[in-house]
Amino acid sequence: MLRKYDAIIVGAGPAGGMAAKVISGKNLLILLIEKKKEIGVPIQCGEAITEFCLKDMGLKEDAKWVKQRVKGVKILLPENKYFYSRENGLAIDRSIFDKWLVEKSVRKGAEILLETKVNRVERRKDKWVVKTKDEEYAGKILIVADGALSKIARQLHMLKKGEYLLGYQYKFDGKYIKYPEKEWFVMYWYTSFRGGYGWVFPRGDEYNIGVVSKYANVRMLKNFCKRIGISPERKKEINAGLIPFDFKFETRARGGAMIVGDAGGMANPVTGGGIHAALASGKMAGELAVEALKKSDLSFTERYDAEIRKTPYLHKSQLKTAKYFQGWGDEERKFLGKVMHGLEMENLTLFKSFLIGLKNPKYLFRANELLAIRKAMLMNKKYGW
Ligand SMILES: Cc1cc2nc3c(=O)[nH]c(=O)nc-3n(C[C@H](O)[C@H](O)[C@H](O)COP(=O)(O)OP(=O)(O)OC[C@H]3O[C@@H](n4cnc5c(N)ncnc54)[C@H](O)[C@@H]3O)c2cc1C
Image: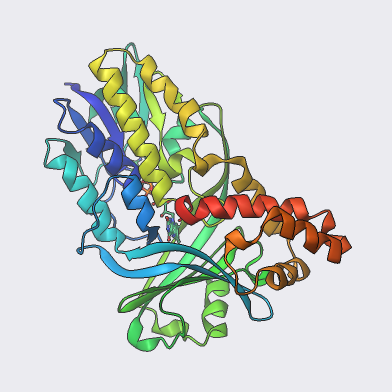
């Protein structure tokens, strides 16, 4: 028999977990379907967020999943130059955080099915029918939160194009790492990452060290570790995954279905950070679902597409900046190093960019690039990781 729900959420990552949290406790029947045996495992993440992200999402920090605090991001450029993006941040444990979030809705009555893969969804009259190997479930609202590969977004023909970055990461026990920086998340913006970057994220008694790029692979990660004096053989875990880079949607909302988080291409194309965007889009979809269900009017969910496009996560300067970085060689990076060394992102003003252009005429025509980068990076301080 077809079991009926008000809302069905596919995927119990941060996006699905947040949507469930918002819908639960309101006398509505919710079903969360997750293909993994254990929520949040294996981890596919650098596990870095801002304090602002939690505040923005109305989530209270919990010692269970906070591993360490940092002052923000330190960005390294060639010739030992660097600059800062200062914003209090947290190294978290995603395997605990993701479960903690889902438990909030389960405690309020949301049903969850683990080890259950959704194979297909289809619109049947006024409902969404969600099919697993053995069962079918019907929901008035469908929230698609099945991550970067989102088979469902494709199956619904809402996703028109999906380009990805690859992320590879080793987790190390801190006792094997001698690394000078312990108060910042460090990003290496070097050409050797072929348009991406390498990261060293301290996290209490551990380090997450990784690479992200269109061309990232294990060799790139091993070479990076060796370059910073860390033996890759000492790793205790490897995490890898796809990150949405350039997704084009016809729409992210149709007929009561909304596509959220990585499935909706929400991750930041400059940094690859997507937790905040996943939480925010899940929250928005959840709130619209509640409104639609309470008023028995699915048209409320259609607003999701326009509203989500207006958020900083999908601002056009993000993709532009990511593409500039992909096209930049050593020379441009050295130039940025000269301009920004020791400073914070805010120090790059319109006036300063113009002066730099006058002193370096070949960069004058690139002042607009610097300004677009500044715009994206200032947004990213809060929303990008
Ligand atoms: C190596 C790497 C490092 C990263 N580092 C950071 C970082 O430091 N900071 C940051 O903010 N972001 C980071 N990200 C991005 C971040 O991990 C994602 O943006 C975030 O997890 C997106 O959340 P989500 O809920 O949309 O998707 P996910 O977390 O991917 O959750 C999707 C869920 O759906 C489930 N699922 C998929 N298909 C089905 C199906 N058919 N049926 C049932 N369940 C299904 C999956 O099992 C999964 O649990 C990183 C990503 C990678 C790969």
